[in-house]
Length: 245
Ligand code: ZN
Image (tube, rainbow, N blue to C red; front, side):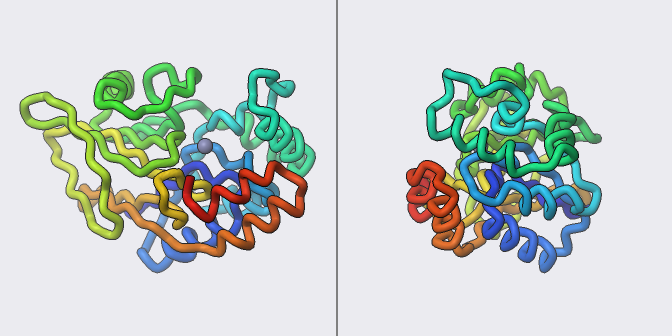
């Protein structure tokens, strides 16, 4: 089955819609969302509406989704706290409940899906190094782990000798998955990429073919940014969309 794995949509409707349109042309049958559905962006309700009806949706919880459900955390950056308070007021009770009930982690067959790391998912660790990826792999206990949170597409893989390596995946090129290796696959961010490329990032996982393909999808980031400014949210959340930072 061909599954689209999306993460860190961050209330960016323009980016989500372009990714969904692209996924439909790729024969995607089922959708996974690795959390951070909301936060930063100006379209939380429209994003929730589109997302929650996707075929077979599997949703895990992100740190922004979780923060919605608590009193505003004073440790948060003021712009983020403000965006979460604003977001909470935009969503229905049913939408908040759907985000609140998402699990930290989900295992299905040979794959684990989690927002930050399978190792202590509730700690929201940012996986940048092979050592962190190894801890994630071991905690997951499956050959494949799909993550988000860092907003940068990355693949960590284990060599036959047991060493762990990282690679920057080229978009549009299928990466074959060896049945003898383990992988941690960061799918990047739909709604706020941070690798210097403004285009939305997502992955198609084909479990029959045993491969993953990263995709970059250009979208109208100027419209998404204009809505953030119009909503009175931190203008930095608007500016960064153009630079992918
Ligand atoms: Zn995020």
